[in-house]
Length: 175
Ligand code: HEC
Image (cartoon, rainbow, N blue to C red; front, side, top):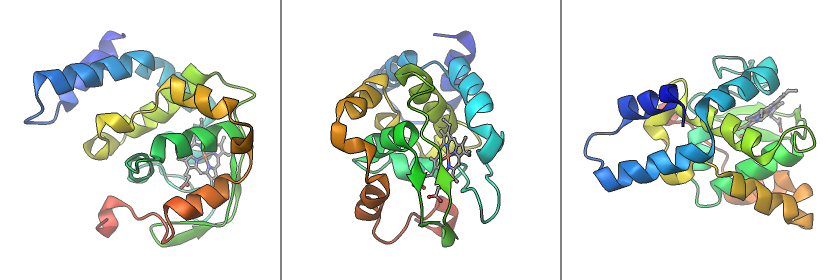
């Protein structure tokens, strides 16, 4: 694991977390390295979502203060895996703002490790780590599983509507 990643983890260790929980967190991060995640994110995601995770008003949803709320759902890792592998074509709502746009499928371009790393980079950046429980970090094996599911390549939008029937709200909106 990279030293930067270790340092970042140590910095972000929530108060009260036991040694055992912390080691589990480190073990999870080991699978998907933050440096790799940063590189992949800057090359393949930031063109739309911005290097700050802010998105672009009305066209591209933010990842800052948003992705942890997707990931925290029991099916969140599976949803995020589908999203990056197969893309998404709205309409969706994030914190009351509607988006009806297309996110491209990236599964043909990037490996499971690269995609997991980019998602986890977004999950621990821009203050998102405060809302990201370690179970929510995406493993490369999550992506591998979704890739093998022939049904997963369609209906990502339907899945989102099932998991969040009332839309996804961010922490700043109180949920
Ligand atoms: C070409 C632009 C583009 C690129 C590149 C892109 N996205 Fe997106 N992304 C979008 C758009 C547009 C949406 C909203 C789609 C919609 O309106 O249905 C979105 C939605 C999302 C969402 C929110 C989904 C939800 O259900 O709320 C996440 C998380 C996300 N993208 C992560 C990523 C990650 C991680 C990468 C890089 C691996 C990436 N995106 C690359 C355009 C992009």
